[in-house]
Amino acid sequence: MDANTVQRVSTAPQRTQPFLSKYEILSLLGKGAFGTAHVVRRRGHKTKYCAKQIHFFTDGTSFDPRRLKMAVNEVKVLSTLTHANIVKYIGAVEEADCMWIITEYVGGGDLHKFISRHRHQGVPIERGVALSFTMQLLRALQYLHSNGVLHRDVKPANIFLNSARDAVQLGDFGLTKVLGEEASTTTVCGTPLYYAPELCASAPYTAAADMWALGCVVFEMLALRHPFDAGAREKTFANILSVKFTPPADVDPLLFGFVQRVLVRDPSQRLTAAQTINFLNGEEVSGLSLAVVNWVRAHVAEPEAQEQVLGLVRGAAAASSASRLFLVQQVLQLTGEDPQFRELLKSEFGG
Ligand SMILES: Nc1ncnc2c1ncn2[C@@H]1O[C@H](COP(=O)(O)OP(=O)(O)O)[C@@H](O)[C@H]1O
Ligand SMILES: [Mg+2]
Picture 1 (cartoon, rainbow, N blue to C red):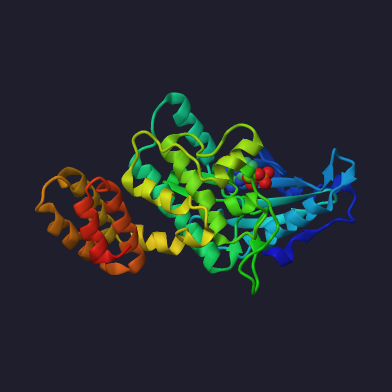
Picture 2 (picture 1 turned 45 degrees about the vertical axis):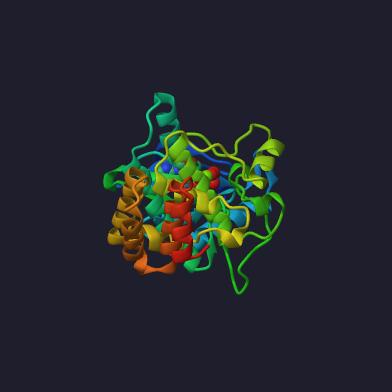
């Protein structure tokens, strides 16, 4: 079923409950700002699905047209998307007072719960897991952005873990915006904690704001805390606007390097999803670049290291200028205290 075949039964008496005549509710999955997600099963079938119910009436009495608009928007956008890292749309049923959006059921809980569990247990998220989740989310965002879709609510609670295939999937397309000719939109929405600086200042929203939000998510996976959360909204906004955060104690240089390149105040200076994938994706490139970073760490004090590092950087970064820039910045970060090294890299690769 696609968006055009959403079952419209608005005029039907409420007691007909077309959704419940087809599906049975098995358990409550989670409650978001606008909807309640349930695990459901089609009557007479085994496969489980997720069904999000979005009520159009607040307090059961006053009709809120924004909720109807949001639900229709979510169905419209989600039904056009096909990507391994985006929750799969199954169908939708519109009733007199609510919309049911049916998607695949992603059985491993959401990333918010996953991070909280690690925080409470005091156990860091394994590097490989964080790297893999980051890559998958980058692919989802690259797919959306290249199709002119802005998610606008990227945050751990909207990222679902598919434990069956070690995957993460982006969900909750209620705030999604499809861009036409224009590359930005001015509606401010989403969750304030994940607002990019331009949103705090009510400037237009572009794909770079989704990348900022992803930067916050990756930071959270590394540090098990939010980079800008100061409790009160004003203080959080002040932190965001001045990009003030305390780096995690023991960071992975590759992932933290990414975070530093997206938690950048000026949206035009942030890495795009495609640029980051270019850098992290090619196994050769990412394997080599990681080797460079580790090797520089171990040998930075040795004079003969310089030529070898330059050679590695040249070789590893031959793939694209974005990956070269990213890599050079990583090396510079690690060799910042060594002015000679810095000069050499600068003269070789520029600023
Ligand atoms: N397809 C799904 N698979 C697994 N869990 C889901 C799925 N959809 C939603 N959830 C859970 O339900 C919560 C609320 O769903 P969401 O789509 O984010 O609704 P809202 O718009 O109300 O935030 C999510 O944070 C997540 O924990
Ligand atoms: Mg949500």
